Length: 607
Image 1 (tube, helix red, strand yellow):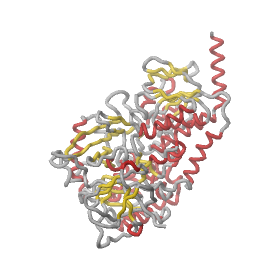
Image 2: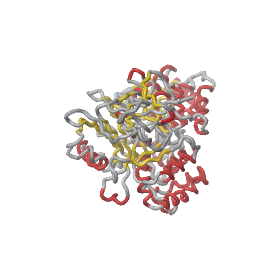
Image 3: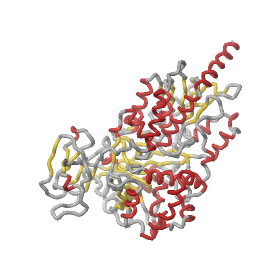
Image 4: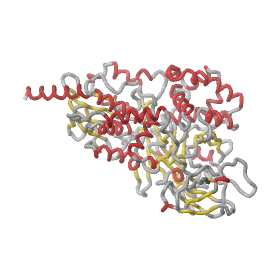
């Protein structure tokens, strides 16, 4: 059967009679060839009302050589089918853990569990507690779902445009996140991109170096093929040394990976005899993408965990973008689910103090407005910095909490810039419908400011943000430690200098080419409120300091990507930590009910 794919938006640059427009659905494949001169076809997913579907015969969609009568397709936006993730071991494990909440016996006396923080960790904790029949009370300090310090917060400006705390990428190797989307019935809100890792090349402005993972090969052969086929970034001797250096990690499994926590990425690479140029070419960008810090700071365990998933799962490194703003498209479905099962979600509920009973257990949370919130159990699902600020003095010398001192957050700056050309709005030509890594070749490293790690043109990657006339670049500015206290204008000036190097034909520092129509800079920590940070800094030897979700304080639990789980600082880690926190509370149900009744008895005796 002939198969087709659809193109979400394409610049069509030469004539052909091989194209027809339809209003029906198709299965689709990669299509590197193209057609007409002035057409501008637009389509996202299954939204027929948003445009016409571009249908191209499959016989022109699998070749690698350009035919004489065809010219290259400059694709502005394409979405790909959802990959088959359900048969992986990690997905099945995550699905089983999810089902354990729904299939557990309903509690005769549901627990009221107070949860501080409505980021992914807090939302996940509340969702799975509600699935198990309990009554979560989720408190968010600010007026937006996800919270200022969350990975998935976003705000709408006066023009109706959204700006976010981070560039949100959903990998195939995120089994708990992928299960969560399926459980909520929102799988169609992920816009999957082609299976490639794409690096911008400042030495060749406007060009990109690609690692393409072929669909026909299983893992790890697809990843090996992608590396071997790339000839622009690494030489063959470097590839061989890199492969030999990775052998212990591939053969040693998880035990070996965890044992590398004491080494930085740069130290591990040198220990394995891998040339520094491999670190400079690939792992500077990868380190900043994973944890917003450089390879000389990042624990190698973090890199190896990512590589493990990418090598073991065929679609592990395949990426998707959310089709709109995270609060509405991801957080609200979770909230709706929680509330449908009797849970509560309260915004503008910042916690001022954790009050204790005489025995050192939690008596209640006190909010900034003086309200007192009581429950049968308490969860802190905030970034670790906020927990440390609010930690009661009586707890600080307990080893479980004292070890938190080594866990610190990473400051993050997310930059959004809307571009036009002044006389009339115009999109940038040399952007791509995917996540892009900012690469700086080692021979010009000292000549360039390494400020950008990953970026994307959200006006072509995201359905809700689509704009046929303007480009909106969303960029992760990292490392941000020295910049977070600087003004927005200084950060934009530095960003423009960097973009002028990447896109010299279209962007200049003085805006004589593409004009900056507006910008937003989102800093975490913020300039107001708590000095908190989104993710914890994954530096060497911090793994032993990460706490389990169940604390030594009866009835008090933690959730967050800094807590003990195997996906470290990521959206996947946050969701998994929430599930593990909910699991601990469900397991402690009998103890918590007995604790509640004991407290009630003590109150009645006193009164």
